[in-house]
Length: 357
View 1 (cartoon, rainbow, N blue to C red):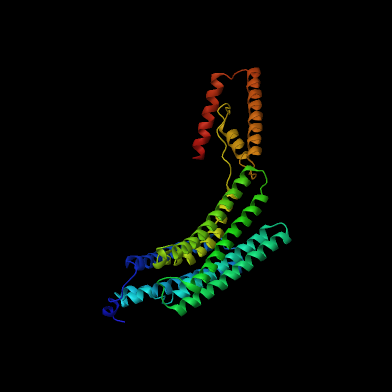
View 2: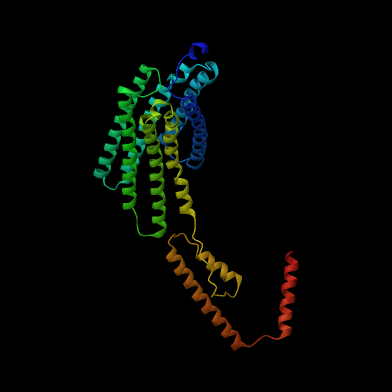
């Protein structure tokens, strides 16, 4: 359709509220694709010994997201380059019924099933873990089916100016189901991680960090889905395309959540290899460098328990002070050496050092 024909169309909303959200969604989609690519590189760099199935899943997610970004970019080129000025092209779904809706439902279900598998592995009870995982998988499949139905109805309608009727109903079911699954995953993971606390400060701090990561990533994807729901229903935004901005990046958020949780193990491995640095004990003075180095080395053992390290360090310090006191008393009993003897020994040490050099 020519641009002259489209100029006679009376738009119910300003044009920037139609074109702006689409453009921002495409830009953020590309940006999150770059983040995902870096995360995949970091994963393959740090986890070379992971199972082949998990490595294949990561590669499949990366390729899937590159294809999705390409499909998102194609209608953007059509709207803003080839059909520039054509308002109907702005309002049309193009291929976003598939690239933004169906592909989002599929990747979200894959990520949610992955978390269900982690919940099953994390649970000490197969019955409890299996029940949680089965319920999450069932909800994930249901929201994926609702998403496929939403995409089919979008293709049938053809115009994305407003969500209404059956299209709005199935879209609400899809997004509400997605939010429910994300919240359920966060609650189950938090519950299981809290049960694994041991009372050791370093271990509990690590578990708290994992809980924050699970809650934050789950809240992020759930918040985006809620934002799409609000902007697609609330007046007067429901007559605009503002909902497309978060909808176009929802797929990338699920993929990045998946990689973020995998790469969080980098911090866990660094924590296992790290040692606790003790504060200097100003009240203790050591007689020579050799014993100080030995005491410091013994305080950097393999154990990660801070209390044991401090006790070992204090015990070594007491023994060292006792040894030093004994050596001082021995020197007092034996008497001091004469100046000639000291100078003779110094000369011998100097000659021996020169011969080595």
